[in-house]
Length: 468
Image (cartoon, rainbow, N blue to C red; front, side, top):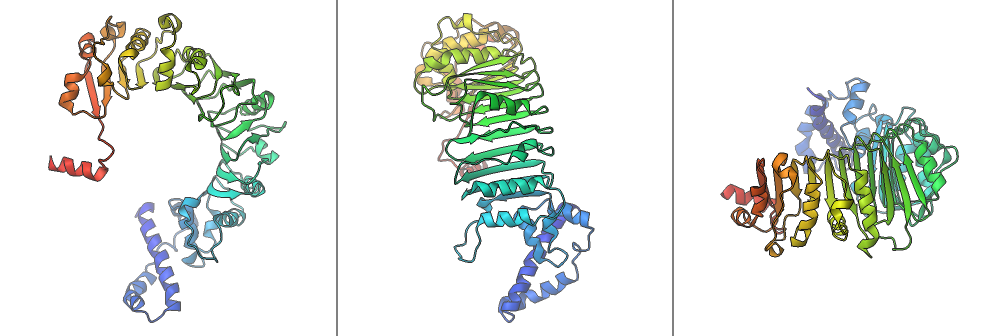
């Protein structure tokens, strides 16, 4: 019998205990009479409670935190077993309100789970809540978890006021993963002078506003073994220069929504990460990204844009593309491609991607984009896979061909993937840009993706295929 096979028994026993408690209230109900025989059988087959403690804890690790706590009704042996679980995942989506006055709030439940944990370590603590939370309460959770040598801390919360994180968080030696999403207007991240994350490998900050250049640089330089850094919808308005110098960094994500005015943000971001293999930069920030020595870069996704003026972003787009010149797999978003259309003599300004074998263009291509396409192909001499993620605008393709054949078409290109959304395969084959297929001597695969319209749900699609 495997550990996973014991879990249904687990849940059945919890159901039995609940029914037994109901029996004490309604001992002569017809339902209870029908269930009495099953309950008598289960009494003699409680194989789970007789298992060793370490095995029981292993079984609990497969249950949600809520179900784990419910096991306390099984027997006196189980009453406090939940207080020693090492992985705590609490999400108010799984605690729907019942409307009863006696029900305590989700936040009270979190308090009890964290406070009543025994002396054993907590490996991970994840708390996600849509309720407004007092910052002092959050700090109590953080402090309590640190007393249990917390390794992974993930907080996604809505705050009532400006948070000030406890200073000892910034010197926590046990932390390996720290993810903070404090959704409060202009949450200013205060970094203490004494900051050192000895073992932190993953840092994710959401909706944090950086206070100034020095404290921000101090934060990053205090993470000597950091491998993953994500800055999501953070505030950059106080920065003139951001320096990310982390030799161990492997993955970097910078994403921002379009919520900043045109003249607020203008800063230089310097990134020194010799071991970086993955870069994702999707941002509306008017930021000058300067990338240095990204020799090992494997994958990059670039999406810079500005809702006020694409011309403001064009220099940043060229600078960022020059910084990822060693990349093997590159994805360029639609607004970034439109920015490149504004560059005169793009062939002279764009670097040559000698290592790139995979190019994804996230734009519904139309005739005016073919000039950009030709330059990108000419600058990708070893390209093997070309993906038009949003296909072609067939109504604006008349008269456009590739013209001069790029070198990759005769030397390396093997697969071209074109996505269409409203055509059947026969029509696609007839309307596809035949010059792509004819121009490449080495092309092994030209594939089209037909995506069903929105009104076709999964059930209808399955029925159509079964009829076919």
